[in-house]
Length: 344
Image (tube, rainbow, N blue to C red; front, side, top):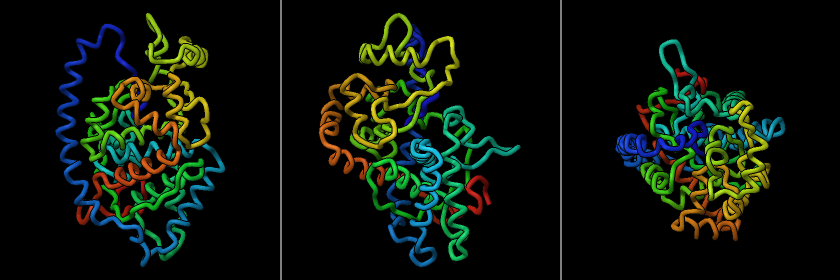
């Protein structure tokens, strides 16, 4: 679920770049603390039956649209989950990541950290919005932010993951700028302390972070996001040598670094707890995945959820519910867009 564009720094550059990176991170966390402070305020308007009076069948309509997209391509699952995460972590869950750039504004989706968001995620929301608006009673009554939240739940369930009640009532954001993405998304080189701090700034605990990281049980990553772990003077010692050799074959250095491989090499088409079993076996693709097991502070949680899919599903649903409350827009802070890709 993390930003998959930034590769680890080259060998020898850590000391020179590290202090600058930490200063930038500290500044970003100050901004994010403001977002976290507002989580409970906006979230107070959320409720499960928010559209009961204006579009009572909205959830079944969205579910049908997502199912249709899922039948076209399994990429729908990882793409939609990642889109939701990237949306919520930048100025809250307000569908601002879906807005297209214009001649006068470079939007969030065109920030370098969002260029790898798969088009199928955007298409899922656009198709669901069209299906909702095709019902006269519902037309322009349901926010794109809520449609994305519902579509994410439905995509996860279609892949075998848990289904859960989605709180509704978000408004769509009125701003989307590429500059607002800076420092908001965790790169794949983050360690446990950095991950924990960034999630805490969004009102999420370390356990929430570990649960949400398991969104990497589906989806893909570009070769250049983990090349530093499989090449250089030596392979990352926290990675299985056999897995590293497999990745070296899948991502030859002489070929396009934008090639992709599955984040979960074992059950790539299932939303399950295999992600944690992979970490136990040194098969976390990104450094920010494997660190959850290599760091002894988070390892017990990984072990627990590798043993029990029931416990993991429960924790994941709780974390997704909390994620969906981040930065909710209310009143004059937002509206319901007629087109998810453009402001009214």
